[in-house]
Image 1 (cartoon, rainbow, N blue to C red):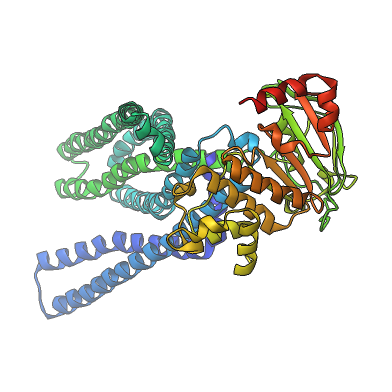
Image 2: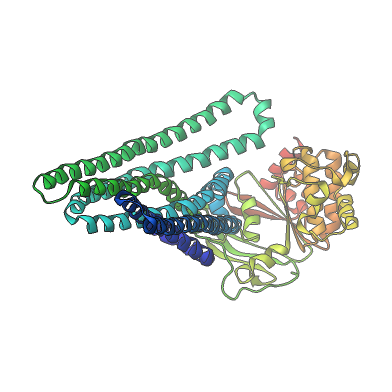
Length: 576
């Protein structure tokens, strides 16, 4: 019920469509309940003999009946159309809301979830909302009104027989509650497993070159098959419950009919009721059990929709740990001064990654971060962009705590060039201009030239209009990184972060890129993470990290002369 209430708040945005649709459902149901009484009256007239007056009355009733059927058709159309408008707009609105929520989510949330699983919630789960609001709820109302109307007629015809019929209603209600508790966890599990399958298939498609190169098709086939089998088992477990539940409702309905026949026969025997009245009662009784059985069938759809709703709400209600604080300001264009003051950081598991980090990078200066894998270098860059907040200490931009700056303006002042290069499906030009969509072609070409990728682009089939494939599949590793560097150059942010930006290029290209980065350094604050230490010898300051702490700092010459960890790392680097 909590899930239903929360989801129903969303439909109120489209309440006009929904109110009109539900009103039309009610009117269509009332016409269905009225029509049998007109047919009964016409049958009675025909049975008693038809004269001219009776014929006139039959024609009038026939006209009324035709009008009712026309009204019923019209109301069915209005209800179907209006409810689908409301339901699909709700689905679309929820899908966009989910997408926006994922876009705003903190990295600690996203890094613990597969993209394919989140995709399943945005696509598959949201579609279930249309099922709930366009089909399940209206049909519940139709069946509920039909049940109430027929029950009223039965009570009017013979209250004793009606009470006999009512005995099975608590049994049906108890069966529905039991079914709901048993089956929803299975449907929710099945929905989750669909997300797992989606995630696995997406990973396999994106990594198809690796899968084929290492001959792992059979292994991946086995993984997907295992997940598919689990999904099938979960669905079949839910459908097994359905297979018991639906026939049970039919059985209880049949018991109601048997009870009416038995009690009605006894009352007819004792003279308490006419046989014709028992027959009429049984005819109406069939109309009573039909909506009950219909409601039972709707339970399965409702449980699937509510299971999907739970998964949707899990995303919408997940906490966002990094947000704009009250009073956060847009700082415009930053000077580029970065300060870490006694900064420590630990991920969710509590293990400290950084311990009491202190350093300052003045505008236009270059600071390099070096150290073994896991020393905390990349974590520092994530903290600068405020993808995470430090667990202790303060990070400042232009002497202002970055928590006092809006996320949008903070990140607008930073251009990252990451080791794990991500290119969007589209053209070369579109990928370079991603961070500055309004860029002219001349600006794009100028940025590509500075990044030493222009000549490569001109050799591609369609030049700057060449499509790069999913995640840049058509390009080499070096080309992808240089495109990313061109993107950062085009943005003209005062701060540039380079995380192993030259790791996938050859020595000649690295030299060219290094010349470009050296030229940028005077006008930009540059944070460099480098595996090849030859690329950072010109840095204004080098920070050497070990197990989350800064153990050495100084220029290249100073650190070599100190004959410490940096010299050891440098010697290994140049000998590789």
